[in-house]
Structure formats: C-alpha cells, structure tokens
Image (tube, helix red, strand yellow):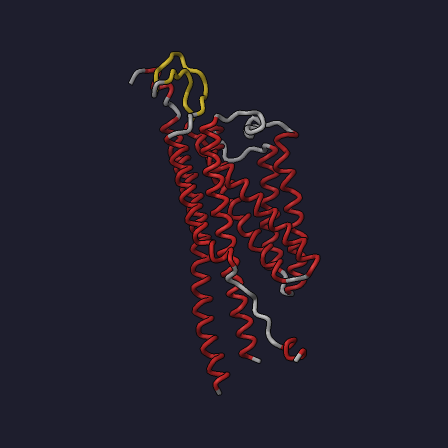
Length: 256
Length: 61
C-alpha cells in the first residue's frame, strides 16, 4: 500500500481559493484604478510650476503659477513602483522557502513573482521616462534612484536569462533563488536611496507632508487598484503554470 | 485668451502626448501580460481535455 502511494504520480495542485477570487480581484483593481485615474484628472489639485507675471482666477482659486499637468503621471508611477517592490519581496520570500525545503512549488511561486515584478518595473520605467523626457528634456539621467532601479531591472532580466540557460531543473531553481534574493536586497537600497542622497526628482513626499488630502486619497485609490491588479495577475499566472505542469505530469503518466 | 492664462496653461498641451503615452503604454504592457496568461491557460486546458480523454481510454482497455 505504502509502495503504491509512493509510486502514484504527484500532480501539481491548482484552483485554491486565491485562484477563484483572482478574476474578481482583477475587476476590482481595474475599477479602483479607473476611479483613481478620474480623481487624478478631475479632483486632485494641480501642482504648481514657475511663477507667472500676474494672477488669474481659475475654478474659484487665485492662480499665480504655471500648472504642471505632467505631475499626473505620478499617481500611477508610484503605485506601479511599490507593486514591483512588493512582487520582489514575495519572489525573495519564496526563493528562501525553496532553498530551505527544495519544494518546486516555491520555485514556481518565486519565478511568477519575478515575472510580475519585471512587468511592473517596465511600467515604472515607461511612466518615469516619459515624465523625465517632458520635464527635463532627456530620456535618462543618472539620478541615484534611477540608477539603483536600473540595476534592479538588470538583475531581474539576468534572472530570466540565467533560468533559460540552465537545463537541469534543480540547479536552475537554486541559482534562480539566489538571484531572486539578490534582487530583494536591492529593493531597500533602491527605496532608501532618496533618503540617503536627496534628489530633486524623487523628493520624500509622504514623510515631508508634500501631499494634500485630495492627492493622498487619489493616490490610495491608484495604489489599491494597481496592487489588486498585480495580485490577480500573479494568481492567474500561477494557475496557468500549475495547469501546464499538470499537463506535463499527465503526459508522463500516459507514457508510463 | 489673456496672456496670463496662456502662461499658466503653457505646459498643459505640450505635456499631453507624454501623459497619454505613459498611461497607454502602462496599460498595454499589463494587457499583453494578461493576454499571454489567458492564451496559455486556454492552450493548457485544451491539452488537459485531450490527455484526460486519452487516459480514460487507456484505463478502459
């Protein structure tokens, strides 16, 4: 009996409760992001630029500065960056779990979290670069935050190159886990660098009270929405990968 | 429009393509990833159905 149990093929599981709620979370995330988008453009106060030679009344307020619409990019730039950090935290956590247990499930979790992290890192780069291009007239500047974030992106890309270069699953998962942990180590460096080396591009807005209430609420909607989209994508991808692994396991079972 | 208002709104229109580009590209990237997941899932489901059928046939013999 025990021998039979050991011989029975172990199919990767899928379809737990987070998988079942993932589509609903995705829809909720899209709804919250849309509300955040509308609040950003219709409700949140505009940010002022350089002073102008005169005063005009706009919407019941005396305006004396150039209005910077480009700042509206910030409402999605920061949430996608925070979500990328969260995804990397999960990737690192699962990488540690894999190294401790050698359970392939944790390697799959870590790999998918790294995929989601790469997606949101790309979104952060796109939104940030377009802002930099308009405000500064350049596509890139060696600001400390940008540089550490670029290093982070390169580590994540290296993670996938490394995984594709190794055929043996155990070794691939182990090396991948080590690189996921290295990426996680870069996260606090990237996050804290603006506090250690102050930069005009990335001010410490929340701690220094640089946001009004309407801006903060708008940001919360965007942050919650994007975080939900990130979680849903992670779970949907996880379900897909596990189903593919089940297919492979069934193929092996049929061949036997 | 009066010159002060022109100055106040001077960066609004030029920044539009960048703002639209940032939002559009971000959602396109997310959508592409979601589509990759969806197509991958459908493909795996089809394979699963075929394999389960083959397995049932094999066990029936």
